[in-house]
Image (tube, rainbow, N blue to C red; front, side):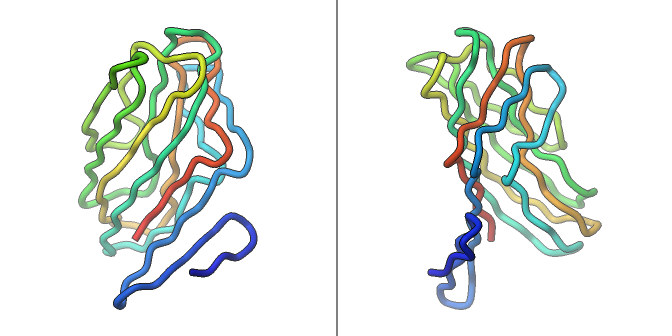
Length: 153
């Protein structure tokens, strides 16, 4: 287990590795337009297969205003990922996505204590950066909380 002191932790096991980044400050979006979630990014190389998962804690300024979650990045020959996030106190909204910034709306959120999970696989056909993105269902703010994580291998 190794950390670089800037929120990046790497470990190796049996010839493979995983890298984990942690969101260091809250990231707020106040529109329906997707915006990057700060530190939740990783560089990719064309032709390499990547698997990833993110766990994002978030708040909604307006109870009932949902959040949208997606990825953005370079062109791919394969992209498929699953997003599950809070819909109500006892239910979740789920989506399977095959395109960037195509996240569908969770029609409701709690004021706090919401969680979004993303997991999937991609093969980029160009070098670039994968970025976790978020947007609001409406005009209120959605805040991705510091401590949220993105892991890839």
